[in-house]
Length: 286
Image (cartoon, rainbow, N blue to C red; front, side):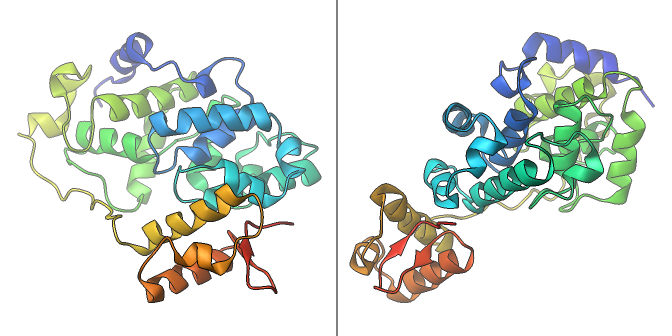
């Protein structure tokens, strides 16, 4: 296999974004928070919320002491707010079961609430320097193009992708390699408009050398008019209220009554809202 490490690492040294969770003094908790926030959310939106969270809750113990509704409130408009509940549950588990320290062991990380293979590998690697294949969308796309001559990776991570990523891990500096490939995918080897002229491994890229055969692009997610947008509107009312909210205040933000009730029921079912006996609603408490 063509040597990829040196050119990609050299490119990363010259072009990496200065992100706080990559700093040498970033805590494992800060890395974990960033990884959950960055799922399906651009860096530019995550940065201000991450800073606010880390100032307010610099340790898992600090977040665990709060009501889960406060995590939802300060999640702001990052979207997919169940991630806030996941982080709160993680904070409680870390505090109660691991002495307030984010575990370094990959297998132990997987036992935390809502932590899957990618997040466990990312935290073990980026926070503790572990040797793990970190396969986010950007990494998978770079490897699909450069090595497999495919424009896009499969919808779900395959065993073949994982085997390939593991085969490319250097004996030393695996964490640096992982974040470098991730950054290349985020900044250069993008999904819609890859900048091949700026790519440090363009000359070795199997997809480019094959004439860039087209693949099936990932499906974009619609938002306007969806239940997800409706849920966001309802949750914004609860987040801004700092207390119980009458049903009429929720009814006022979405015209379609059937969709609104379905979305509200979904928020309650997912633990993002509570229905009180007096007919009002609020963010979740203990």
